[in-house]
Amino acid sequence: MKALRYGLVTAAKEHLTTGRPITRLEALVLYGVSNLPDVVAELRKQGWRIESRPAPFAAALARLNGHAQVTPPANLPAREIMLTEYWVSR
Image (cartoon, rainbow, N blue to C red; front, side):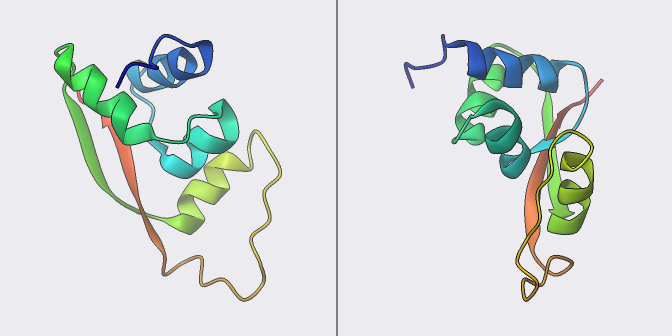
């Protein structure tokens, strides 16, 4: 991946390196980063220890709504959908 030198990706990297969790949904809405796993892979190559786990869509949406207003469709099973959440292990 060669496009990791742009500011939006840098913002997502800084978010991760502070230890806060992030999902692809949050990376896309907050930072405009459409491929978070590439950012994670680049950080791992640099020696960062990145952990991951499944997280409910509803939890990611709750965190996201602290910064932006995102409303899923009424018929979306938000508690059943799982996203992968990444964070830097300390």
